[in-house]
Length: 249
Ligand code: 9WO
Image 1 (cartoon, rainbow, N blue to C red):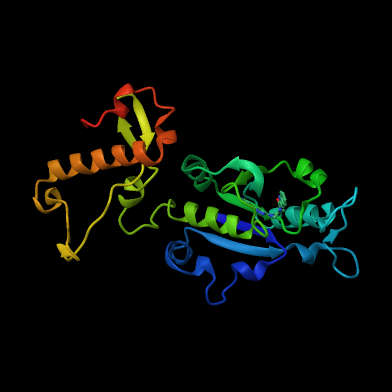
Image 2: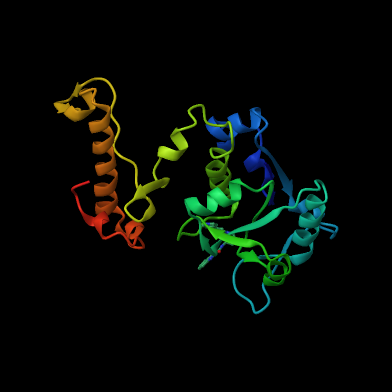
């Protein structure tokens, strides 16, 4: 998969120490060839002599607004760099909330073009003209869309074929599909334990030491259900299966 990020802060995606995507799974995905990403500076497509990408808002008010032309030209130039069709995504608090289901659908695309706005926002007309999928990673305001773009890249990278060492672990995480009496639900993860068996007076649940794989699987499944019910009942709310509320799992 090829991911392009259009930003006025391309250095956030660069090779510098601390760059979020240079650790762990995204960098592994890149090394394996499953993922490539390129950050393009929208400023490179500004036509004005000062390479201006923003201007004052019509109607007044604080801050600056990203101008249509540099964004439009950057999108068209970057899309022309590769013949595969790009799925355009704008990261914005006004977007649809990102879910694991959306991540899965985007991870299956050959190419993503992520637009990270800055300043107070982007001129609405270029958003209308580009018609990107608008996505939000949560109900808070960042200083720009870049960190949200990295969140999306990270979440998609770990779903690419061959990226995770243990092919099972993606499907056993929080938010992966879990079969229920009536279809599938997305449940939270169960708790995890490792050595030592006793730590500061706290022991590991006995069943995990039993060697009884069936009992362990049932315990984990029940933990997922009870934790989801307790912490995120909204995840179960859409399920038709009334037995999801039971603790007899
Ligand atoms: C600023 C602002 C101030 C008061 C009330 C609402 C407000 N919205 C914004 C705003 O959207 N600022 C943006 C900064 C402009 C474009 C990019 N920026 C951004 C993207 N901030 N946060 C995101 C973002 C993206 C995806 N998911 C969560 C947040």
